[in-house]
Structures are given as C-alpha cells and as structure tokens.
Length: 193
Image (cartoon, rainbow, N blue to C red):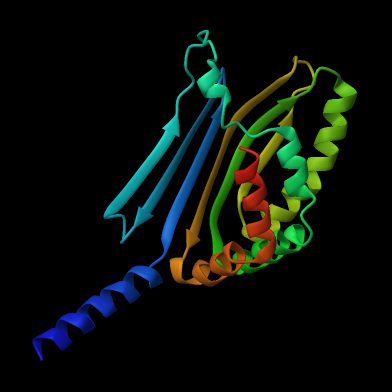
C-alpha cells in the first residue's frame, strides 16, 4: 500500500512538473557592445536560471590546430540543407511549437541608422508594418525610431517574455528529433566532423 502511494505521489509530481509553465525572459541591450541576458523562471519563480553576456574587452586569441578540428564546414552545411524533407520537418516543428509558446510581453526601444538616409528610410519602411502588426496583436510596446543624422548605429533594448508548458512541446520535439530527415542531417554532420 505504501509503495502504491509513493508511486502515485511521484506520478503526480511528474505531471505537475510537465504542466506548470516555464517563463523565459530575454533582454538584449545594444549600446557600445551587445549585452544579453536570458532568465528562466519555474515553479512560481522558486527556481531561476540565468545566462548572459556582458560586453567584454577585445583581446587577441590564437586559434590552435586542436580548436580548428570539430568546426562545422560550409560544405557540410550545404549538404545538410539539401537533405530532402528537412525543411518540411522544420516548418512542421515551427507550426506545432507556435501553439505551445505564448508571448506574454514584447517591448523594444530601438534607434536604427544606416550610413545613408535613403537606406535608413527603406529599412524603417519595411519594419514599421511588422511593428504595427505586432503592437496590435500582442498589445506590446514596440518602438523603432530612425536616426537619420547619425552613422551606422543600432542602439536600444529589446525585451521579451514567453511562457512554455513542457508537456505541450514534448510531442512536437520528439516527432522532430525522430524524423528521418533530421537523422540524415545528423549523420551528415557526424560524418563530416
């Protein structure tokens, strides 16, 4: 009887862990360098994982022959791209994951300038319909401002918060990982290493 109760409690905990959402917050700031921070919250913010990068001082690094081995070559990337059915699998994965991921917050305050005012205007003209659509759909605070008088520059910040339920991404990820095109692509990458 005690063994049955322990088994049911463990099963209940596993279901609870898979059903509760994981909140992932991404913050990217571009000033003198790129500073990004990724934070994942789980179990009502009792568990928090953080990853990030601060802009660092540039220093010279000599690449050794040992470091060159194992790098992905352009020819292997080209072979992977040509695997038949891979793009269909990726498209199906994105379609299935779109239903599992809920965007909770999306904010940006970006100042964009290219070297030429003409190209800056063209870029802003392409981005503004997307920004307007996202602001209407997500009721978010996206803002992109052109800076016509400045040199090549991207300054500002971008913040996003998404909620993911692990149980809802389990089936699409498993189907993607075990699909034949993904296995072919993985075999090509392993063989060309």
